[in-house]
Image: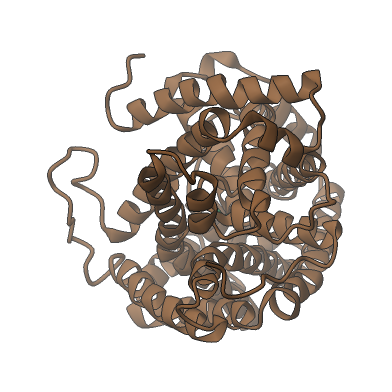
Length: 459
Ligand code: TRP
């Protein structure tokens, strides 16, 4: 039974801004550039775009349909939509799993959001001025080795997120994205323009758009799919819950295309902001996760107005992170509130406290508990600390599981007619094409990737 009438987004645009805010995050600006760097550029970018088009957009539509059709949070949505089916308890479980996954993601995401806040502060304090080589690596390693600093900044990002959530949809989420998203676009644009005037654009174009297909293997496909799903916020109830607040007269396919387009555009633009700076300075592109936190500060130090742009860059990362953490936090709160278990404020406090414990553990696993590898029964897991495990299991494994079942649910369990009405494409070829992808192609491909993830891949 529903105890609380859900608030709705004020308009399709408000939803779009919030959903883009969710999609655009550390995945686009921090992770995408270094993953492209590690995977050799053009071919990976093309593959990524193809995956967004073929799987990403249809899956965003799928999650929006599940969320909006009963206008209920994920667990209740799965339960209500499977009413009268023998498999109902199973689908309720899928709902649970979709709500737990973003909490697992937040367990490490808040820590990285904390790094970005720490860097804004360090940049303002001029900590990266007049560097000698090697100093930024040392500074980043120092940060990772300081439990107090990590937990402090993680707590700041968590408290800001919980506060926004506790204020509700319109006064909290909508207001936050209305302020943060325009700033985010403005900063990103200034960085690209700045990069454009400093040269290196031609190399960047070549690197990003000249495909070398010899660089693509089975692993690249898994990597690109994982990156695309993560970047589009799939497989974790966040799109579903944002969809449950979407007014009925807004077109789901249009919204899905808008989110996917903006998200991919920002990832590419982030490449155009970062790569030229790196090419110009003859630095390594394949430096992995250290790209943003170790390589960029060196370069900012050498550029005119580098400190200002450094501050802006890390502020951009922090804003992008916050609009994503609120979307990861919302599903659990929405479910608790709808069931009447807690008021929204209490739910934010309780979920926030639980997450604080988890994220603290994950911050401590970088230093104090560095050598603690809790899961030793499997060769892939045995060398991972808590933070790595959270990332690997929630952001790779569970996201795929949840997306797989969301597709099966829409394709095979719910009435075709109900889906047809909700999607608003009519019984057109476009609808049939979408349904074919969701019914067959997604289960086969994502199912294979899951087998591969579990170590049973066959090529
Ligand atoms: N998409 C965000 C990013 O790129 C992170 C994010 C928000 C997310 N919600 C999600 C990732 C749900 C996976 C699932 O940083």
